[in-house]
Length: 292
Image (cartoon, rainbow, N blue to C red; front, side, top):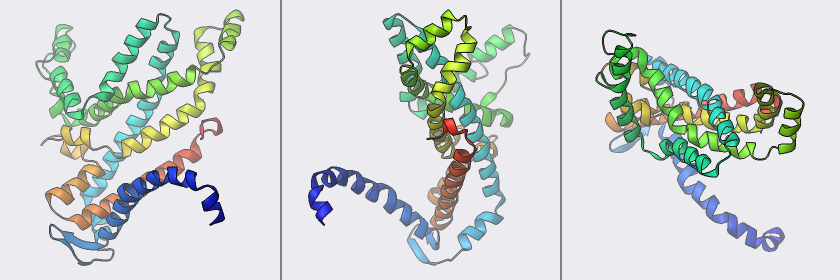
């Protein structure tokens, strides 16, 4: 109580954040865990089900397929979503005219502000059989017939990965760019005077300096990609559904379309466990300089 009275103003400032997380994070999380042990449908909980919902998950082939889809899509998004934004970040740091730099910042950041409906619409028009990509490929005699990208199962997961990386690239690039601004310019000048090439400066100065930030972007991208829903849901159709149905999409289908809230909640708990496990394993395998 003495500490409470002494730091009352600080506790008062923290209280709204604590209340927010309690109401919108911890309460829904605890409710979801409780529902995962219930037989719950459209009318709410109908009785304790024990571990039956989890038993159904681990014997249902569709859940395993969704889990593999989740890991495959998350792996691609994490790999490319962590590394590719370094390129525009370095380009931003090298551009001297402020107007040109601001124009590039706006250009690469704009997709991050767009909704997934718009993103999918842009990509569908670009990759449609009469879109610009097929037109260029046919004109260059690379293909003889248009490719139905959005109806081909082989292209389903790569497209989800590509769309997500493209959408988030500007956000991650600005994180890297902010970190690059903290590099001492004298280090770069000294390396240039010593005859270091551009690649050597990137490898020996820029990347080591960015290592902690790369670790942060890696974890943010990984955790976000494991919850992939919007892009996979909007990409799903009769031919690609089995390739893009992630655990988040499967939980939505079971809970809101089939009204099996117990099964859906159990899927959500499994996804939570997967996210926590992957986060701990990833942090353990990251190099020490990239941990945070």
